[in-house]
Length: 300
Ligand SMILES: NC(=O)c1ccc[n+]([C@@H]2O[C@H](COP(=O)([O-])OP(=O)(O)OC[C@H]3O[C@@H](n4cnc5c(N)ncnc54)[C@H](O)[C@@H]3O)[C@@H](O)[C@H]2O)c1
Image 1 (cartoon, rainbow, N blue to C red):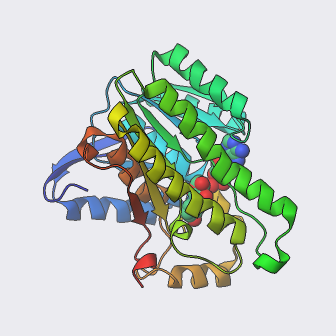
Image 2 (image 1 turned 45 degrees about the vertical axis):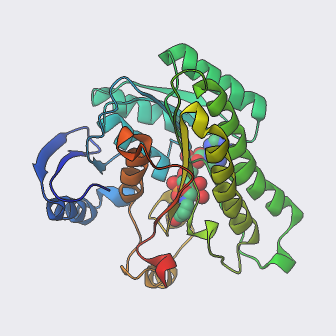
């Protein structure tokens, strides 16, 4: 991330925009402001990002209807990208598109199940047809499984998690590279996890899938650097989104908070900000990387 004085822009979930210029402490204060307001916990479109000047760029976000995906869509739109919102939950993607358009952004929703390669190809083709190209992709759609050690992980759970969290990212990356190659290149950001580099004993499928995303990202980055396509992955720690909030009680929340040296869960916006950076030309020398956004989780 840029150091020192930076331009910042805060987009409220109601579409109100505040912007300014100042040192990063000011950004931190604004993040605290967001967290205190509870807006982040609702994960419904509040975002704080530096303006990465993405005007004229087209960005596809999968799993855009909720949590981190929605925050990424807001962050990219706040930097003036046109956003294509793909989700298996079309209603959620459409609701977000309505909010984004009401805030003055260009946004369209697409129904997509990322485990279906033909549907992925068709969606990418539709985005290119609708917006005139594809420059940025955030492969974020993902799901969690039942907590169980490897010995008790069911075949059904294993296959489902691998299908959504790894195969889906592969199908998307492949289709996006084909759309970007020969058309000016682009930037792809794959949503991994801290569990893409370290393990949890009760999440064998999720850990395997996210490690796979990190490896796929590196391979695609090497292969397609000559095409002008950068591919990176991001590794959030535990983030306050519906995926997590629907699974935990107060005791589990305290436990999860304690896993992070910053002693709290992250906000979706705090993942979206580095995603917007990676998507932009500000990260023009960054490819094949894995970027933890984890409150210090993997530093232990
Ligand atoms: N929340 C966390 O703590 C956390 C931590 C690390 C990584 N992640 C990763 O971040 C990503 C987003 O997670 P989140 O917490 O925002 O979850 P979320 O459940 O809030 O949102 C996930 C979105 O993906 C969509 N989706 C699920 N399966 C899909 C499919 N097959 N095709 C298309 N869309 C599909 C859902 O409808 C939903 O809108 C996931 O890849 C997750 O593994 C989350």
